[in-house]
Length: 121
Image (cartoon, rainbow, N blue to C red):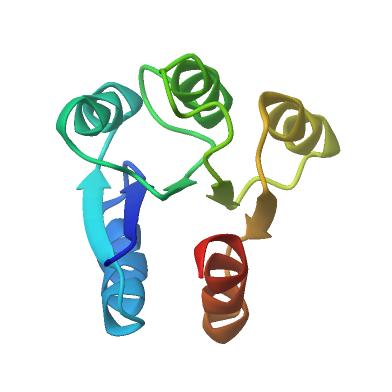
């Protein structure tokens, strides 16, 4: 069964680049440009992993994570924060919200793919 990854980033190039790399690695990809758009995917799809940016309009990454954690069946879904943010305070906020990993942009693609594989196979 194909594993699904939801990529959430308001910068289209990031969702395209990360999505392309993960598709090549064998994952089914969903893309959202905001937290509100991302939450709609949970209504009718099984999401195995979420990759989200920190800074997005309307709802930031930690707020999105808290919303996902409140959805039935998604309390423990692995979430990777892929961000250009460098603040320890923001990193702690994301960790407190329940991320599996914090990946700093620009990032090493093979290492990122290994993080995804480690999270969901």
